[in-house]
Image 1: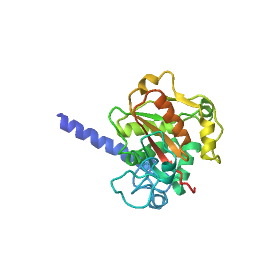
Image 2 (image 1 turned 60 degrees about the vertical axis):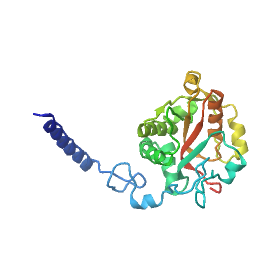
Image 3 (image 1 turned 135 degrees about the vertical axis):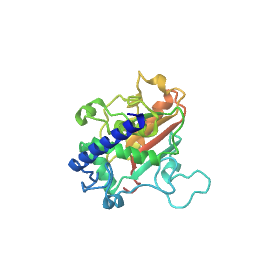
Image 4 (image 1 turned 180 degrees about the vertical axis):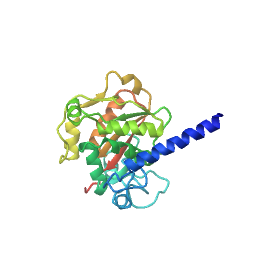
Length: 254
């Protein structure tokens, strides 16, 4: 049997196996569980209810903005008021509607499989951020929360993003030295104060940061305090440029 016949025969066998799997486990919508045409997808209704970000965005945090690109850097009011310690930032979704439900399911609902399609959306949203010799690093989770939750959703997103883009991933580049209280309900100033000194470069990974561009990955950006703490830790360890990419961005009035 020549190589072409062998490959063709194996492909037909694989197709039969794939068909059998789909009959037993048909693809279902990530949002509502209805049948869909492909795995890791959304049905039409859930797609319409998922606020993907497109068009003109703030180049620092990724929030959508009105108007058109004019060849100059565009930033939202918050980013013009408070300079970010990173170069550029993007987000795939607004933290609202179906997006909020999907992220809560990933974060607290034991749905780690959601990280794979989410990373694809992030790869599309962050395509302008990727650089040669870049290193992807997730926002760290304190060990006590990691034990309780069993996984760091930001690390899952980072790992799948690395597979999507081919960019190197270091899941423990950042280290959360102290367990901080939940930040929900706190002002931007309170969040920054709470996180002061709580995050640093991991002692064993500092040499990988020096002189490199770092892409920080998180599930949600609200005020940006956590990403700010991570970016400052990267700068302190000698990083070159810092970029941030999140699955969802909380609107100011959300």
